[in-house]
Length: 214
Image (tube, rainbow, N blue to C red; front, side, top):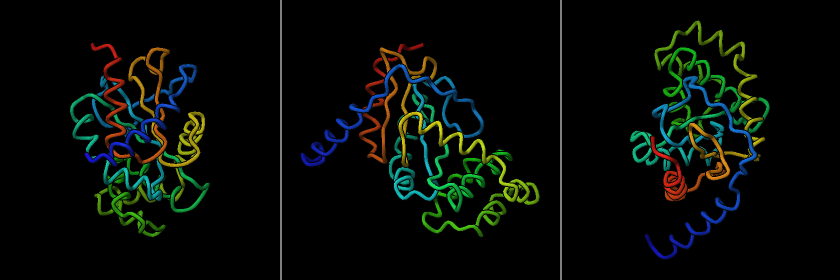
């Protein structure tokens, strides 16, 4: 890594550390509703609050998440959780979140998640049902779920949860202990943005060194 890169990373980490979340913040309950990857008993949990139409969220998906997957999620060190944060109250971002939830009702949440981010900036209202068809979903059930805008309440509950953590844009990430949640000794850490893999790795490794091993 070049000297310039090291200086830039140091600046990023200063920002991340400054906004460490106080231990008084109540830990969120993270049930496996199909939007969780990794081992349930992983020492740490990383929650992403994201919008399928967000360019920086796409950057995280393409550049950082694959490295986190290989280094921490697939190795059992981190459990990864996706949460919705539509930036508008209606429109393609909300529709994409609904489409992913409807796919999740048929056990294909992550397949739709990856498909939607794979479309990048080309998302539009007319592509969700064709995406469901390409994934082999039950078309009638998906169409009914999507047209009725099921899961809207839960989607906006995710956004409200992100607001409680202090996020008012996307993406935002919370890193915390899986079992104990935030504590005075090991508080949750907020990472407000699509920072490079090294920034996440620094915080993950720091927290792993503090978490008691089972």
